Length: 192
Image (cartoon, rainbow, N blue to C red; front, top):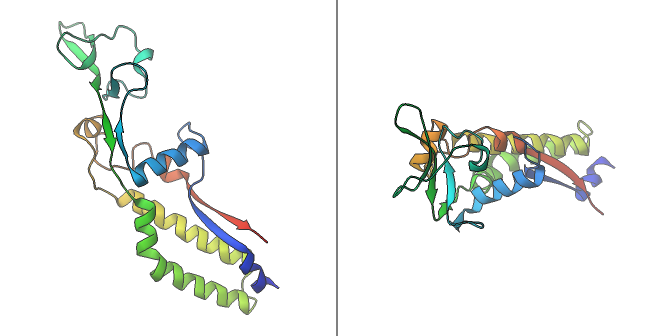
């Protein structure tokens, strides 16, 4: 009986959890934007995209009082009280998010080796009654999700833009707050 249940079960792995103040749908969008890249992102409202510096933190330009665009400079700054300016945002006309295929590369690297072998062992255990169909699929899902998280943590190419490195203080493209890493999970689905 348990063995036959496997014919009606699948495991899905991806950015399936909310995180960092973002919904599951937003985390999925972030994952797909990084997986496939997004060329030519341009402003929807206004002339400029505002790229935050470390000073801006997680605030938007509208949340910081006293910002202005100095003549001839593509930045939003604020007087610092010492006769100088502190730059909170760099203004650009367009950006591109490069492809960082963490899901695809994990699948390619793990499917035929570790995932296929794990599935064979687990299915054998289901066949002899050492494991339920649910336990089999849960074990596979956990392994897959951990492998995707390990890929996120280890991916260093393509590198972040210099402004992103300055803001984050590191060049780990898919790890900033850790929200994407923590959003990676698995689900088990049944179908007829």
